[in-house]
Image 1: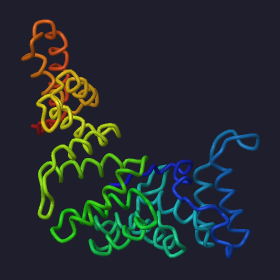
Image 2: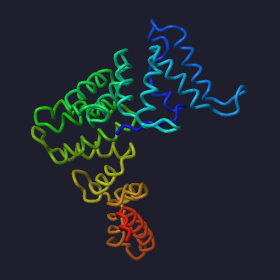
Image 3: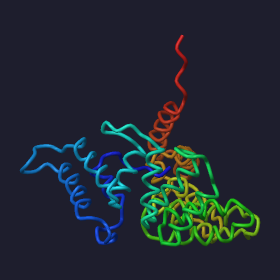
Image 4: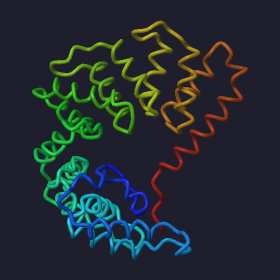
Length: 294
């Protein structure tokens, strides 16, 4: 799920177009949008932000055809908050209006709503068409989502991997580690039409780990510690496990405890192992469903 905050001060960043992108728009639409922005920013004229007032001006700007107002309004409806009830159908409607004006960022959200069937009938093929438009425009999130879907099919796996590579090498955003993780899995485990290559898989897992993906860091740590397709390096593997454990990834914590207690310096490592073991128990208890009330 692509998450966006409902707070307008953040939602105003959703659109990537500037005012010069739509020359046919009237000046009044731009002024409406600017008024919405000003109501969000405390200053000389007001002591605190006015979300309700800003939201009304944002709707007026969107209705007048202002592209960024349409994407911002859709983003607020997508998640709700600040007195606005989430409404996926309205979000879909406004994202579509923005996409019609050329917003490929809006296509990413439209694809998500179609894929999940939120506010609109579920349609995976249509979702992929929207993601393809955005992917071809260079948007990493769309490249990842399109690649992820294609790579799950035998006929699309090769194209899917190409899109995943583009997303993984984009250099920023949450799509980067997710795409690298997918590539690592496909190359490690193999797939129809994909020759397993664990050395190459390790490279992608490492990239995903550098991007902050705890599960990839865990897999990469185990590959280091066992010398799987690379020179064995137990200390480097333990260092990676500690980082993943610090992200509260429970498989990494469990593996770290086992490694500390079975290593050559088990006695000296017992205090650390006990601390991680306690942390693991706390996390597992949180994950247990609450007991039904009597």
